[in-house]
Length: 332
Ligand code: 3EB
Image (cartoon, rainbow, N blue to C red; front, side, top):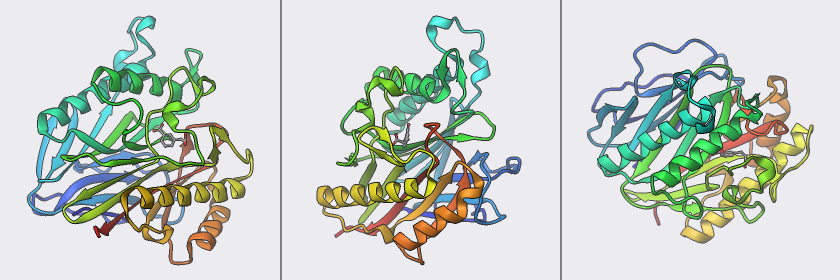
């Protein structure tokens, strides 16, 4: 089983805790001695407390550290965290790429070799966080540099670069190193695309020299449970950003995209996952937009919606909001 929970308290990291790991979203400095958690420099907007996303499985948890990757696993799932300081590559000859591109490539190659060695070859989801995501250096936006390195590493590691690819998100933090977390399994999961959107791996070149590489959601059946992991979802139709400058309309469009992904997932996997079944994290570019965004989400998903809100930069400069989520349902 997998239980993804979003709270403000930190769970224990003991071997019998079932804890696979997680992410702590906070504007405060990292909390010491929490190796099972990635620190993400983002302020929580709906509460003063930090936001802790934790993934719990069952059975004995084992932990390891390899090539700067902290990982924890049980019989079914492995969760890992890699942070990498791109400044290590500052002196690399230009033709090999920018420091962020090379750091991304290294991180992903190390992740895939760890997963191969540990026998968890199927990634359900990646979470990608980097500072200054929209800044242009060496004539290329940093998110686009990241996409170059990600594509290289997938290809070099023998991973699919289209079709059955992991779900993901990619967001900008206020500070900190490139931080990638991932959840992997021993069995393949099902990648879901959105009929309203062009697959991200098929985006045209206007969004960068190499396309992003993710699916819109992944569905895995693990231990009698159906796990639904929704990628970061924004106001994109086809491949274009819709409603530039209008955060309310972007929120509504994002929810329409999520509904379409759920419909597609239910068709493809015979699951029955509704908008109300998910727990959400909502990334908002401008903190002052939270009231508007929250009202629309509570109106369209329902007043009982479980959602947490954090301040983040979104990977396209014209996107003001992005929504991700997860659910674990009994397999029917
Ligand atoms: C989009 O749909 C919005 O690069 O891993 C969403 C989810 C987005 C994942 C990624 C980017 C990523 O293109 C951005």
